[in-house]
Image (cartoon, rainbow, N blue to C red):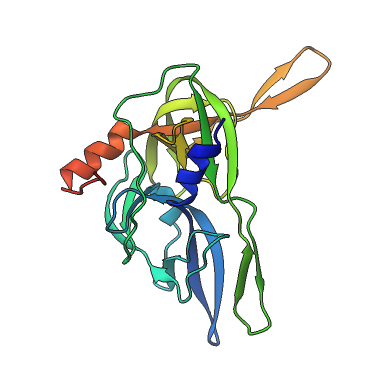
Length: 235
C-alpha cells in the first residue's frame, strides 16, 4: 500500500546527527531525531525539542540519506526559524534537494490510513580507520491510522512547555523518530512525529495492556511558520 509513498519519502527523509567534543581530540556521534526536506534549497522541517541538549561543544549535521547514501564529511545544519510553542524547527543544509513532497494544509480525517517514519534503533560503530560506521542506521516505517484530534502539553524538563497540536496516531514512534514525516499512501505529508501519549492501562481485572499512541503535529502550523518567515516550498 505504501510502496510508492515510501520511495518518495526515502529521497527526502534523513537522520539528524549530533556531534559533540568529549576531549583529547575525540568526539561522540549519535542520532537525536529525523528531518525531511521541503524545498530544493536544502530547507527541512523537524521538531524543536531534539535540539534542546545543545551546548557550545555540540554540532548538528546531515550525513546523507542513510543507509543508501553517506556524505563524508557531513554538512552542518543551520537553524532558519522555529516555533518553540508548537515544537517546530525549520533548518537548512547547504545542498540542493531536487525531490519534493506535498504538504497538506488540512488535518487528515479520523480513520485515514497514514504512516509514520524515522530513524530509531541506530547502530553506530567505529570502522578500521577510526571513523564512524553508519551502515546500521536504517529507516523505519510504521503504517497506522488517525484515531482522533488532540492537543497535549509536553514538558521538556528544562523549563519549556510545548503544545503538540494535531492528531493521535494508533501506533507510536520510537526514540529517533521525532521530527519524522507522517504521510498518506500518496506520500502527502499530514503531520510531524512529535511525541507519544503517557501509558494508559487497559485491563479486564486479570491481565493488563499498556497503551500509547503517537501525537503528530499538524502541518498547517508548519506552513504558517514558513509563510511568516518568507520560506518557499517546492513548486
